[in-house]
Amino acid sequence: MKTLKILRQRPVLFFRLSGIRVSDFDDLVKQTYPLWLTSERKRLSRKGRQRAIGAGMKYRLDFAAQLLMCLIYYRTYTSHVFLGLVFGVSSPTVCRRNRDMTRLLAGHFHLPERKIQLSEADKDDLLYLMVDGTERPVHRSKKPGKRKKSYSGKKKRHTAVHQIITDNNKRILAVGPAQEGRKHDKRIFDESRMIKPPDIMVLGDLGYLGTAFEVPIKKPKKKALSKEDKAYNRWHSGLRVGVEHAICRMKKFNIFSDIHRNNGLQ
Image (spheres, rainbow, N blue to C red):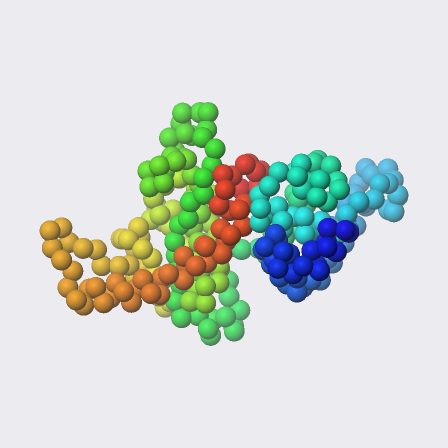
């Protein structure tokens, strides 16, 4: 495909538009192409289909081009009309291909919502976990009840909240489902019932007061923190900043940071 060929020749532009390097993209194609072939065989051999396998209209974009188009959509969160112009297909085609690629990638990169699953090698490297909530803007609901639930007093706008769990290597281990922006981080954690490896320290901010997490020492009213307390808070923030770095990497993809408009994919 012309767009893919041009971007391969310009690796910096490829990275800026897709969010991943060319070598990582090639690895991703190798990992997901067999899954796509399996899903295509299932689609073409479904009950009720009149045409034989091999008959019917063919895709204008090959698998690699479809995957690149989906990644550019995640990175830029631009309109389907513009992507269709860039890749030479219609807006409905962009919508369908992005939807199918999203389902394929979600199955390949499945992240649990509350249970942390680690290999034996990962368990050996695990020193501690970090938990934090991140908000993303959403459209203001027309219904007063939903409007009140989604309004975040912290952000002063309507948002959805996701709970993120990372390890000491800043790897994202779990992402919770979207919650109303009004919900407090601790309430989201209590309802999620996180399942983690035993005897592992978990770091959180002051939003997780009342949990078993390691949280900063809160300044008493009309009193100052001691030098030991300040030193502990510096140690704590130096470790916990890793979850902020992980969230920052996520939000480099505009689909995670701009106003959410894909109601079926949240």
